[in-house]
Image (tube, rainbow, N blue to C red; front, side, top):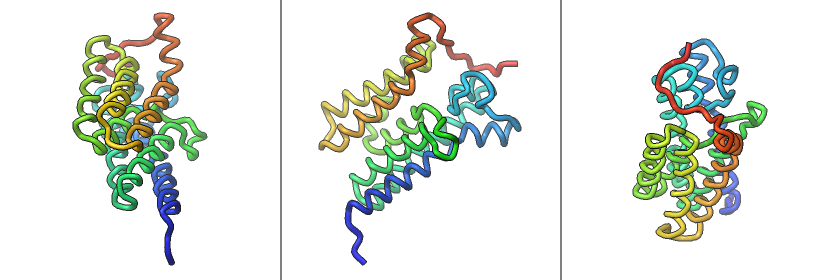
Length: 203
């Protein structure tokens, strides 16, 4: 039976969304701490909240898991449907991470997953993006500022140096999602209530 490209792209989108529903913050908080990270701190199922609540090791493990989720999405999507498939599956994974149906659509902010996807799609642009984001976190001590900076830098680099419309559309969508997921952080930054990063577990 002939499978149309549209059906393959739909498969990539659905598989990506299901992959995104795997929330490593929740997995590691249960496995390592017999707790649910969503019950603490910001209530977000992401690596930053894991870092603040459970410490550096838990934060790094969560970041790595979410990062590899983005890499896997690109590689699997590319194997199934070429470059178009990689963009579609990566976006599905970010959406699944941000809005997981299995968790009442309350997920993380998609930054680590977006970085993994960006590096897998274009290593040079992805690494520059990651460096810009990390540099801004180090400079400001605000993870949210670094995350949003990385999203904007990735979008701008793809608009200027990206090859083809697909990477530009992906970069635009990924950037907008990161900004959307940081609306509350933006509000707290404006009112001076945003928390700075700490690498120590809170008691």
